[in-house]
Length: 290
Image (cartoon, rainbow, N blue to C red; front, side, top):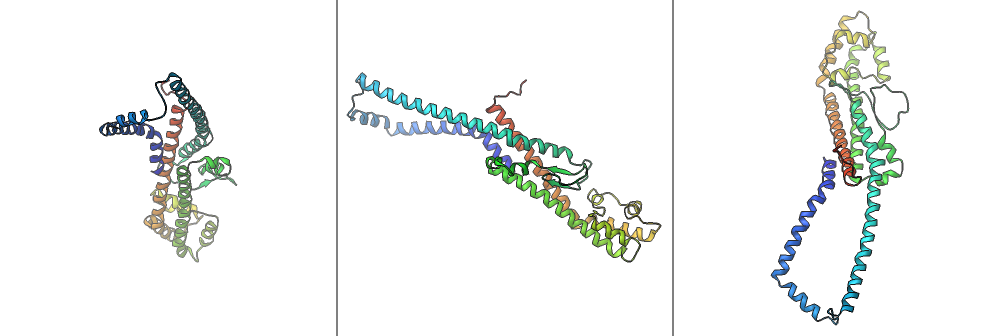
């Protein structure tokens, strides 16, 4: 929510500050009138060793004041142009790439209440299935000069988002390991022991996806996954054990963490979209009416 509040403040601060400045100016004028400050100022000006009624003196003073305002206006205009160019450039090289990849990530999220089996931040170093979620934009930005231009609030939001995804993967591994420890005593000394051990070493999730999605694990599922023959009693024990694991704290922790990951993702998408739209409207003068 910090990103949303910060961006809302950036967008609305000018609209809020303008009325405040006007109100303060009116209060100041009223306060000066109540103290007869204008009369005091007029008396102080008459005491100055300058004859303002002299056309030469008033003309020279007007030229000096006008020159000061002209120089200040030129400096302000140039500074504003540099500022606008910097804001538009930041939009093009930071906000837009982030938004594009965040939206792409959002579209890749499994549907129907399923959970992603893998979330990777950075480039893929080896083959992964098409269901793997990847987010590379932030790692690319952090590795070059663009990182200097990233606002602190956005950098913190992106770091928190990445840490949330990494925590999700850690909790998945912890839950999977607990499931393995639950079924290990059941298969120990049986023909399924070697297969279960091999699956553990290869990073098998042991029906974690089914438990997260609250799907009932059948004997056929177990027989197929562990390549078991006609061992009905053992298969039945494994089925009862695994289905009872749906209420494990480690499994519930994965669900909670995934929800946190998705909330942060939506917040980043909404935040970067708002910022891009604001820059386009205010500094690039792009209309949405056509």
